[in-house]
Each structure stands twice: as C-alpha cells, then as structure tokens.
Length: 212
Image 1 (cartoon, rainbow, N blue to C red):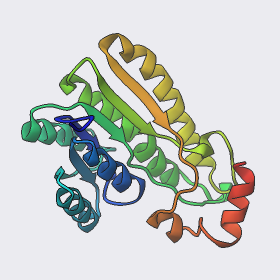
Image 2 (cartoon, one colour):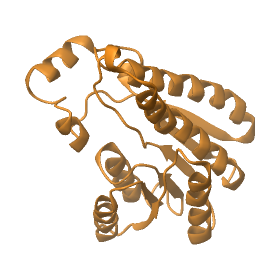
Image 3 (cartoon, rainbow, N blue to C red):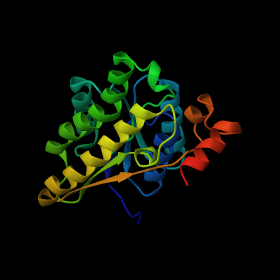
Image 4 (tube, one colour):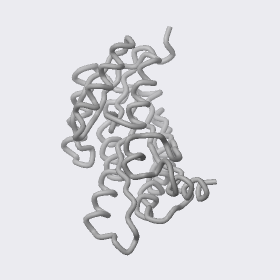
C-alpha cells in the first residue's frame, strides 16, 4: 500500500521546475495531485500526463495565487473534485536578478505578492477545508533567505518572510493538528535557472562560493 494513499495535495506553480518534481513525487506515493499554474498550461498538461501515465491522478487548475478570489477558487475546485484537502505545497514563486539600484515599486510588488502574499492567501483559503488532524502546509523558501548574492535583495527578503511566516504558523496551527514546514532549496537545475543564467559559467561559480 502506498504511504499516502487517498490523500489530496495541491501544488502551486506545478507546471515546471521544482513544482513539477514535487507533484510527480507526491503521485508516486498515492496522493491525488492538483497541479496549479498561472500561465504555462502546456507545462501543466505535460506534468498531469506524466503523473497519470505512472498510475496517479492529476487535476489541473489555473489560478494566480496572489489574488484572493483565484486562491479561493483553486481550493474550491480541489474540494469539489476530490471531496477534501490534506496537503498544500506553496511552491509558486518568481525570481530575477536585479541590481538594487534598479529596483522600483512595480518590481517589489510583483515579487512580494507572488512570493509572500500568495502563500498567505492559499493557506488561509485551505484551512477551512483541511482534513484535520494530520494536514500539512509546505512552504518553498530558499537558501538565499540565509545566504546572499548580489542582485537578489528583494528575492532574499521575500524568502526570509516565508521563513518567519512558516515558524509563526507552525506554532499557531499546531493545536489544530496542522503541521507547517519550509524547504530551503539551493540552486536547482530548472528551466528558470537556465533562463536566468544561474547554472553554468561565472554565475554558477559565484553562487556556489556565496552559498557554501
């Protein structure tokens, strides 16, 4: 019997990168996985097809998790389809190298809304529908919340906020039987990392030195 048989999990930002990896790994242990995407429908469909090919169940829902109504709709569609919700993985996020001198309010708002407000809205939307006790929230943070490289000041700040949010919610929700944890990945071989030039060449060497 699979370890997580009959569980239902939402993975936000699961059309590519780390999100896809998480969704596919969950499916191997039995959960029915809801693959959320904001713009990459083709990527979401590919992830779902791979999960179903391996014998899992996948459901695709488009939603911008930084918008309250769409976050609520994502949870609503999940519960409507599967009848419950056990696990929420707040993976959706954005990152981009930008020198501090070039930062503006638009860039700041864009990153903070997706990286911080998104997990807040999704967790709040999920709470009334969790199959308690034993439900889980997993927030994707980053090693850059604790180690730093040039051009990532606001990104690092957004992920430090996730660390604090995770710690506070872990204490607040523990009496309800809900666990809250964070994962802090380092540089990962994903589509986004290649687009930004984070892997290979001087950028990777610089990051490796800073993150040791």
